[in-house]
Image 1 (cartoon, rainbow, N blue to C red):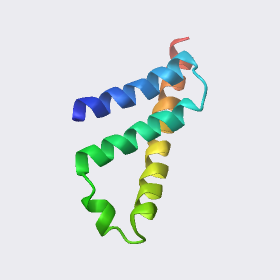
Image 2 (cartoon, helix red, strand yellow; image 1 turned 45 degrees about the horizontal axis):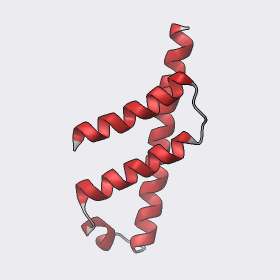
Image 3 (cartoon, helix red, strand yellow; image 1 turned 135 degrees about the vertical axis):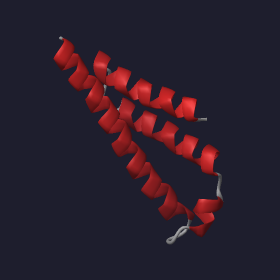
Length: 82
């Protein structure tokens, strides 16, 4: 499972490096949400304050921000390398 997460982050960084459209970040963030649900299961969703939808919203926002950071890292690497 950690390898899959590294691959997902790698796709986000590669997308930034190759200059793919920015909406790719949303798809990568969605893949991270799915990974999160597969890795941790549904137990945190039931125990979260605010209910399952609030939990999904929170992890969606966090994972989209993480995907955007990986995209920006790839973009920055492209600018450094040229």
